[in-house]
Image 1 (cartoon, rainbow, N blue to C red):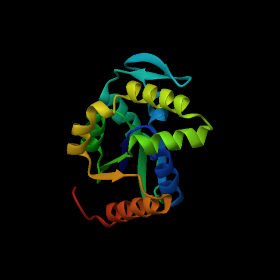
Image 2: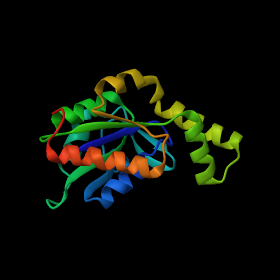
Image 3: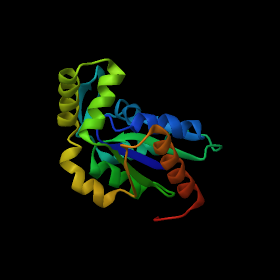
Length: 178
């Protein structure tokens, strides 16, 4: 199991799509959050989900997913809370790595502006709002402590995908930390 976390616009969705193309079963965390019954109902980006939920309920829902046996691994994209990521890793019955993906602010701004055809001010406004809501940057020190793999995604797309392939190969060959 790979648990993807990272800063906004750092490449988590690209990682999820690429690893799915390599035979990984991909689940967006939103899929689990919309099915929870504990916690407080909220709406993010037009989708009703929960915050402040029971982590045990989250893990139980995740463990209850019907993951095909033919898959190399499973991946949950995109954790924003260190505590939930740690709880999930501890509860997962097989090897489970937290992979944190980040990029410089300049790279992230360039990506969001290009992807959404925005000017710099619009891109900054959206990025700042996403960062504030997700509070990932506030937890960077903790993410550095708990992440099994860390990717600074400021290089080319090809280099990034190679890095992801290496992580997947390490995970499935049973190398590295447990």
